[in-house]
Length: 83
Image 1 (cartoon, helix red, strand yellow):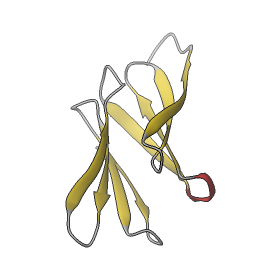
Image 2 (spheres, rainbow, N blue to C red):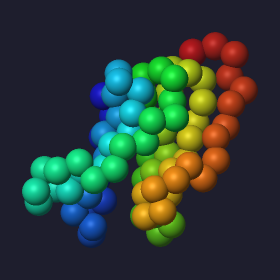
Image 3 (tube, rainbow, N blue to C red):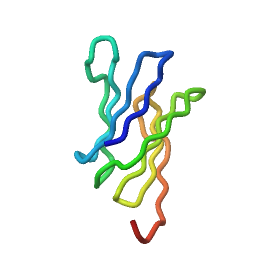
């Protein structure tokens, strides 16, 4: 399980064994959006607050960047041969 928090927006991000990255409203504890492009467990999350970007690393050997305002994949990086 990986977690990042955006305190200014009252948002939390989680990634885990279900291969998804989810954005949560901290006040209501409700899921806002779910990103589902990974094919294996999420191992790490990193937040770029200045650009509304959450990045995720996965056991599928990819790193993905998601724009959580537009709710879309920005880019995907691959190339690691081992995990």
